[in-house]
Each structure stands twice: as C-alpha cells, then as structure tokens.
Length: 632
Ligand code: GCB
Image (cartoon, rainbow, N blue to C red; front, top):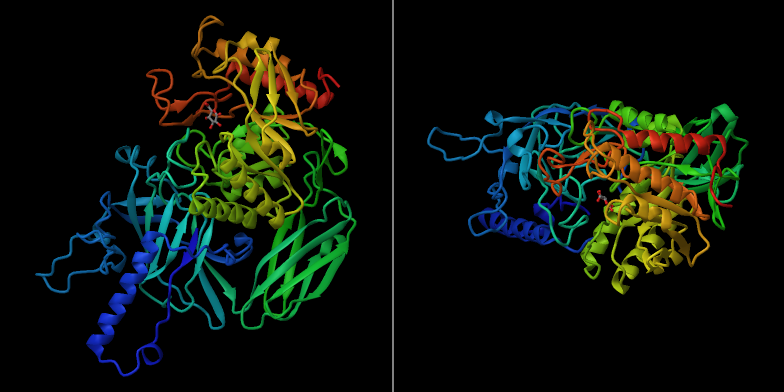
C-alpha cells in the first residue's frame, strides 16, 4: 500500500484573509485530520504508478550504514496520550532550546542499527520483538539544477511512515517490495534528516496475516538510496519477447516530467537494434519490433545491454529474452519442453542468520541450488530482494516469485485484497524485465471456499493484465479420494497455468513408505510442480531410519518421495522444502529445532544433510535424461 502525503498547502490560495493564529489552528486541524486518515488507513489505493524502474541503472547515493534508532513499543513517538496522532511526534526530531525544555527522546544519543538489516538478528533483545522502531539518518545533498531527487526503499517490514526534515512523505505497507518518494522540493544542501517509523506488528487483516512459518524480521531490511534523475526521465519500461514469439520484442516506455512527449530510442546495440518511438502527452509509448537474439536459458543465460534514451535521459539495463509457455501438460521454454529441477528458498542469510539482502548471499544460496542440480528455484513466500533475481538472471536459474498470500488471509476484506493487489503490482513492477522469472504465484496453501476463489481470481486477472508473458501459479489444495489417491481438483486450477502442490507424505502425512502406495490424479490437463515436500532433521543428528528428526529419517522421506514423484505422469517440476534451515517461531522443540525449521537439505551453516544427496542424484538422472524413470 503506497500513500504519498499531502504537500504544498499555500496560505494565499487556501486561506485568504486569515490571521496568523487562525491560520495556524486551521493548519493544525488539517494536519490532524490528515494524520487520522492515514492512521485509519484512508481508502486511496494507489497502484504504485511512481515506482522507478532499474534503480541500479540510476545515479544513486547510498543511505546504508548505521542509523540512529529509538525502540517505541507503545508508539509514544506517534500517538499522544489520547491515542491521537501527535503533531510533535519523533519525526520532528525536536531538540531542547533551553536547558529547562522537556523533550523525552533524542535520536542523536540513541543506539544504532545497521541498514540494510532486520533488527531481530542485530540485538539479542530484539530477537522476538514485534512493534515499532524509529530510524533516523542525517545527510547533506547538493542537488544540481534541473534534476529531481527521490528516496528509494528496497523494502521495510512491515509498515513504514517516512518523513524528511519533519514533513511526512507518505506511508507504505507490505514488507517485501520497494517504494519511493520524491523529495526534490524538500531536500536542502545541508542538515537533512530522514526519519522512518517501521512497525512489524502482525495483523489479522494484513498480508501476510498473523500466522506464518517464518520469522517476522522487522526494520529497514533492504537498502535505502537517494536517486537523482533529470527533470524529465524514464520512469519505467518493459521489454520482453512477445507471448508465443521467439523473435519479436514488445514493450513500452513511460517518461515522467515537464517534457513528457518526446522521442525515445530503445537500443540493443549488440544486436544492431535501435528502435525510435514517440511518447504521447502522458509520456507513454508502446513498441514492437523484430529481433534476432540469442535466447536466455539455464544452459546459456545470455543478457543484452539495453539502453533507453530520451532527449534528456539515458538508462542502461541488462536484459535476457526468452519465451515461456504451457502446452497441455508441458512447460515449454524457448519452444522446448523443460522439467523444472527446483528447490524452495527463504530469504535468510547463510552463516549469519537474519534476512538476506546482498549479492554475495544471493550468490551463495543460488550456487548451492546449482550444485544440487537445479535449473529453477521457488523464492518462498514473498518477493525476495532484487539481488536474488539479478543473480538468477546471471546464473541461468528460472524463478518462481510469489506474494505472501499465505494460509488464512481475510478473503472478504476489501482492504486485504487491495493490499495483496498492491504487493503483487509492486513485485511485477520491479521484476518484469528479469528473464529468470517465469512464474508469478499468487497464493500458498489457502483453504477452499468461494471468497478465497474470488480473491485469488482477482489477483490472477491483475497479474495477467500487468504481464501477459509469464505463467501464473499457486500452491494449491489436494485431497484424498480414497486412502490411496491424491486428487488435484481445486477450483482455482481452472485459472492458473501451472499447478503448485505442497505435500508432506512421509512427514505430516503418514510415514515415508506411504508414498509407495499413492497415486496422483488431476481433473485438469495442466503441468504440476510439486512445490513442497520434505521432512526435518538437524544436521549431524543421526540414528535409526525409523527415528524422527534424524538425518536417516529425512533421507528416507526423500527416497520414497523420489520414487513416487517419478510415477506422476503430469509432473513437470519439483521443489523440495527447503534448501537451507530457517528461523521460525512455530518450531520450539529443544535441542532439535530451537526455533528453526530444520527441513533444509543444507543447514544454516552450509552443511549438507543426507537427503541433499538423494535429491542431487535425482536431478543428475533428470539432467542426463529429462524423463528419467518417469512414466510417459
Ligand atoms: C508448508 C508451508 C511452509 C512451511 C512448511 C513446513 O506447507 O508452505 O511455509 O514452512 O509447510 O515446514 O511445515
């Protein structure tokens, strides 16, 4: 949810002939009304039309590093004692003017936290903290004439209220997608202070809702940047192969600024392409052109240098071109059927724990997946940081990306839907030019029902409108029709391109051998990705194969799973749960879990468990013979 603040109230126009005290009191009333509206969650639902595309292709100044923070569990810095939004909140960064002044906070002598970074993993006493922390960063910025300046947040979990120099820029809801605010008219050469209130309290009506099986890492979990652009600049663009084609590129450009109607060139110089287009008065232009390109694939992840040039701006990107389709039960990449050898990954940092955010961590996780034999990853259960997607582009790993519509969302609440739609829109806006992403997934393990179906259909329609080229999926429900047949006939199946299905046969559902007796059926002729399966064992915990929590038990789950998976004729992908152990508040078992979900094939310290090798061998077989052992 992105809500820019109201700005620019001018005395002369709005309040003619008003005395100064009357004017002040009117302004106070207005501000209070506004803050109340923001607090109550006003209904203005912007579709992030303002997100700047390809932030790394821009001139940026990092605001990462140490930020001053104030922990505020009662939100004293936001509400007064009547629980009304306060005019003199911490965002004012007030200082005593005389020695008798009463001000009960001081950012400049408060403790610090690193940004990017969740707070939970930075201080022992914040491990379980869910609430508000205020962040403050001071900076100077000499903005050249004829430029614009934005502050860009790669993500803040979960609600962020943002203020520059005491003025509210806006509020953003949703913990895993980027947002930006323009600060051109507020920034000054010296002494700027950016204050962000970040609140990660879980809410029943939020997305995700109260109940998840992952850690609710709070804070400015990803980088914060100042982005400088020309007065008129390329705000957004899309470039992909047209659906169903291997040699025709389609897309659009959106120019923003006073000179929005102008000539734009789309250049792929390595392929000898320069396409000229003209934007309309709203700054928008669409294009399509023929192009003979080396297609992006896991075997050859070719990326082209693409430039979008206007009279006033030039932005570079690295873009791969590939097609992805479904034909009957096949998933078809660049015209060839493909089996998705995948693994699920949470955005958790190897070795150190906490939310991952860096290219280095992305490379570690994705190279572990490659070593396992993967050509595909499911980035669960929310949009991961952009470095993951950029590295997947480079390494040639196809990606399933999803929003945190997980378990028990409030299907009938229009605000919950708007929130999910906004997060879906922001995910697609950020990553629509990344060739690695082949699937947008709209939900995980959601209970059957009419309200749920209507909710998810709206998300699917939205995803198709925003991006006609990728496949849509969801991890869906299945059920037993007798003790031996697993049936996939979730009504949502009609609307997706590919089924996702999570099953824990051998772990939550019977013992490992149960898998040998099962048959899988579906009422649809669509490909299936087994999007989760597995079992838990801490690395190094050994014992008899029949003893739960041992590596041997986990290995046995995988052995029986693999045999079962090979018998599913419409299976076109597998994503075991999960690459690496991750923190979860739902996993307290002492000496085994200790608040970690231990279903990793690899421990959080990078140690490979026995089950890892079962999966690796299956993927080796599939690499040499994509239909290895599977029934036709
Ligand atoms: C699931 C969920 C996943 C959990 C996993 C588990 O079905 O989709 O988020 O972590 O099971 O380990 O139980």
